[in-house]
Length: 285
Image (tube, rainbow, N blue to C red; front, side, top):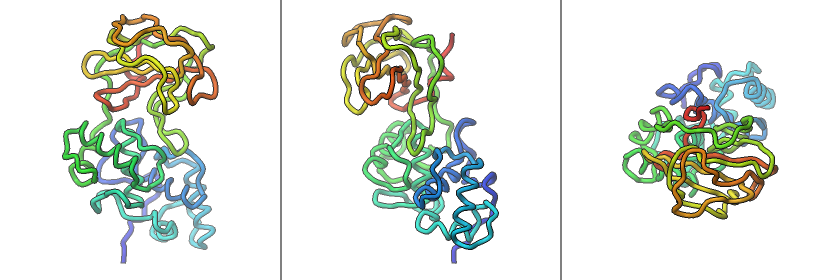
């Protein structure tokens, strides 16, 4: 018989504290994924034990005719079915698997800069590709499976940019870095009028300039020192060329809505040796 620990949502935890203050709890995220799979939760998979998650738990309990207390205890976890187990770290997680631990793994990979698409608790090709990229980045064996070494590496705080960056345009922040619906937003969005100048956040070398598939539209990537790259997407116009050196504040493009964009804005990403990191802590001015 499986044994569960009865804990309120606020206390759901795995072996290790969340990697950063901004990051939610991977156990709560796994619960949200399981509830979403049952059609009971339509909120963001953010790992935050708030009212929407509690309401979804109560819906499940009501449908299962068990104590309706909003707590993910033994009976509630059992009522979730296949996504209720196993706990993260209790098995080697590999392609073809599904469950609570896969959802927690996907959540941690995203926060460490390697999103794998939909947070759905299913270990498919995209999750394996994201895992391999993280393993390469973190210096752990590149097995494509998540064992103790990989999970230990995922307990470290998410990386941050070692460089201070300037804002690429003066505007109000739109969508931040982090969970968005059932996916993960790997940068920040800055709404602005079409044609607004977009400027380099730091000195560097242009390593990509032009149309990029995958929803980016017109995009510019600038390589900086210390393994940092900045990426500027959805541009209406690119103003630099490949291999061009730019200074901080140099004009590199203009705001647009090309690619997968519902309105004019700049999608701005910061990558550290390939891992997406939150731009906000690095941005000044």
